[in-house]
Image (tube, rainbow, N blue to C red; front, top):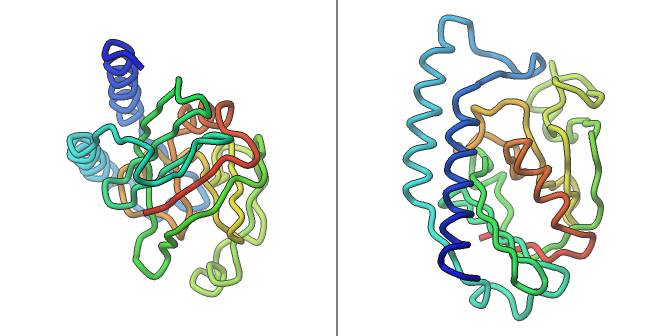
Length: 202
């Protein structure tokens, strides 16, 4: 990839991340913050995003994968970034993410994409329901769905890379185990990734 192409992709990523940080809306199902705190949350999210973007850097795939067959996704839970390389390495993408709220909920290692779903539905896992009994048993596709507009299901049960309608989550420790992206980013990644794409979480 040329330096000019990398710079263009990086500028596009930074611009879309900054744009996405402007409009903040929480799904009704999980909105637990009173209206009086929305301004403070917006400022916190934007500050967090700026700090997170400053820590982003392009990575090479070689230290993490032996090849890029079927494409490769690297999720860095420390910098809260997702890296994607296409099989022929002509496409490289870097996206900001949400990550699990605690080490106990964070899974690291190798897995792969086993299913791709547009407009996914959602049900809490048994452990989520135990921690949050007030959560609904099922949420249909739509603006209240915590999986956003697309989901990549991984070979680990209950783990996904998915979108979110609640843009405040991105750049933060805010998930129950999954990796979240802005909807426009998961929609792009959804088209690039395939069933069988390699995934590594570090």
